[in-house]
Image (cartoon, rainbow, N blue to C red; front, side):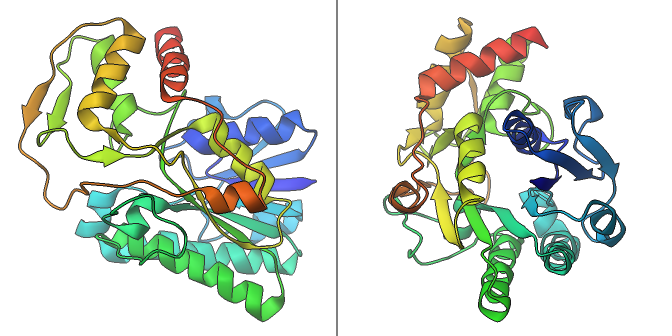
Length: 300
């Protein structure tokens, strides 16, 4: 099929591009390169430099059959400081992608955020759990989901939203609003001291990027809905750092800093619905995924 991957020059998006090319799809990337990198885009894909808030010309030229919407304002701190910008990109950008896709009869798969949408968890959160975003970023991703669901009801489309856990893997940036795995590995690869905020007891659900990519591909064959994509396994930040240190073979004591205001203490996803309806399950244990991620950091 002809597919557009928005944010396809980014961390997760570039892996999705690779998977679609591997299965023989014609792949186009829409990315403004504010975070994405040209060199991440496979040579078999065509890169269109542009913004999801103005997708019409590119969509009219490509006439996609599928759109994988990964482009977003993803910095939680930015969403707090400038909620209007966050909503402009994540809400209005998603609406414009939906409308551009509708004109061409294209299916949309949206990258959403499990941790940001559910807020504090008292156990693995199913899709039916109460939604309690703690930052505008989570609210804007939830709005995007609701627009997809509304389009499904209004137009009979089969759009899918994937609520992602904490994704890690090769190509993740160790700087800026990066994932903690990449931040730890970037520090250990150099001379920096890794920093843990609070006592490190806060837990997250860490899912390897290859598993996430398989969920996106599986979602293309589903007729619509919302699905968690994680592992169902909680790992504390302290334990994660120990696992990263073992994967790297670098023994270095971390520094502890004051806890960050508003940080979730517990976030983990129940992914049984994806197992039942998408025939999807995570295949990579944390140790395996970390080993592969460290190898990629060393190679860069």
